[in-house]
Length: 315
Image (cartoon, rainbow, N blue to C red; front, side, top):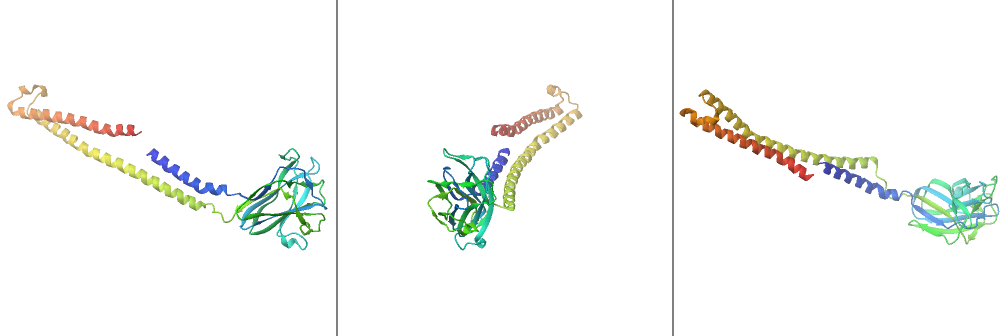
């Protein structure tokens, strides 16, 4: 019974893990990743605006975008501006903008190479992006203390989700009043950046009601199995009671013979030859009843011991 309950409980846990596990692995996949060890960084200022692009065929939620940056002077924490738009170049306006933010280079730069060190700084998070073309642009912050540098990705490792393609990178030597509207040219160097998110076409995680339904289903299986086991034990107990009926009847018959033997003046059972003739048959019956009673007691003891031995053997 304990093994049955343990097995059923383990089955429920395995099913829950099989339902939730694969979806947890897909909870934050890479949409696009273009990375390489940090080399020499390029400054982001009014004469150096950088942008990169990608396109996607699917929709994503909880999108985060990060870029590898550093400070022109070690130890400083300069700031810069980031823009996410659906186009760049002359004619681009804030109507084409999805989000913009200001980011800060941290003091600690944990990603290092023999040439330099940088930090992967989150520029945006919590975005929802549908199918389309996207442009990530970084421009200077006019009031920043210090200058931010970005790292060109030389011989980068590129990872793409299904339906995603890497676009060109761009560079502008003169900044427009709205940086994404600058006059960009194609750059030979890619930007070190990573975009992650949750595809909306993924199988959704099971709701609480679904998990409760599965749990209830398996609890019913366990309860039914335990009830079946208890029923078999009850049947065995009833059969044991029926086996007891015959010895009990023999006990009653033995008492009846004893009372008759005493009524007719009988003595001890061991001295049957001394009994009167009329009590000889009664004494014989009494001995037989006693022997049958003792035999039934031994049989009953053996029948009660067998289930215990079988139970110990099964363990």
